Length: 404
Image 1 (cartoon, rainbow, N blue to C red):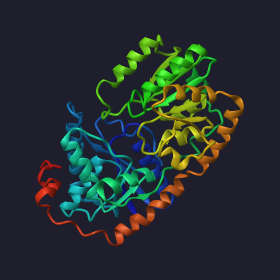
Image 2 (image 1 turned 45 degrees about the vertical axis):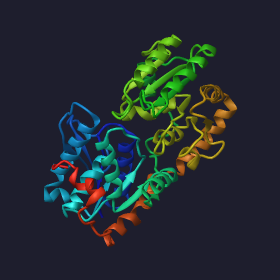
Image 3 (image 1 turned 180 degrees about the horizontal axis):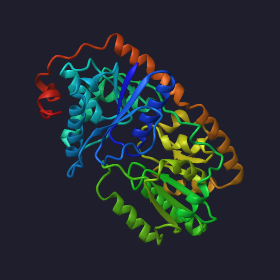
Image 4 (image 1 turned 120 degrees about the vertical axis):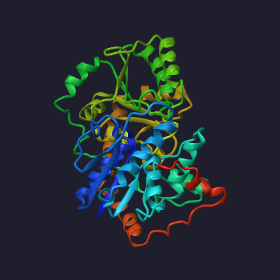
């Protein structure tokens, strides 16, 4: 099969990492999977991929998130308006942007339908973004989710059934053995001899960074040489002002920020350095309030790094007691206890071994194979294309911009 996979960005985000991992695994299984993304920088994807990729022509956009999403939908439509670009057996959207572009192509009878993976849904105030989120779900020919949690959400909120396909991690990239660049990365970040806690996702409310900062501040009083590394960047959808709250918390706690300081704001980290960063960290801290699956959790486990996760789905779906430390994301004190417990040698050894087992059970090959029946079902008999909507459902087409 020839499969077009659409992602929202070429940047290092969980959704994009998932799309690339899936595309590579599908190609290894003998299919031709091509990962697409709008690329306003012209730099291509954040990492080299062992599958074909297409950088869709895009321009930088200033303004609201809705303006950005609308522009990206239009750019996808412009790309796929060329018949050669539509020469695929299956179209698979990993986001609302790609889902809306494919929904419009389906309405125009340019494709027969599409598969949509819903990583998670968002509560959005902008009515246009809300309509686009809904449309990318309800117009899909087949729905997939990474976890049962989000499948249940779709059933409750949309009355639609989604299959659970999970995620994967590349054990040839993420592993526990030290790499040749680990020492240099330690030097660039200014990591000392104390314990290192890692958060991935930037200054993001969804990642609960404020709670991590407050728990780390208390721990730092007990262990002055401890360091917190915050890697990555928050998505544009993050609430305005959350970063300022985090910075204010750092200032109140007297935690300086910079290489070699108690808190290191690493920003986007080169993909080649991510396995080393996991290995250099003593603990990955992921007390997320909302998560699609937690790709960084699998990557850290594959590197032998103990993990703290929220004691709630989706983590509780694929992590058993003893495989990670649990924390209530609303309990800063409890999170701090988990961070201290993660440094105990005997517990670390157990968590390391258990985490490696979890990572080995999450191969990309198995995840890709779970997709194939849904691709085949769409090819054999997609649901009939819906007639033009009327009445309350008319926004599906009448409220969409003419170029989206």
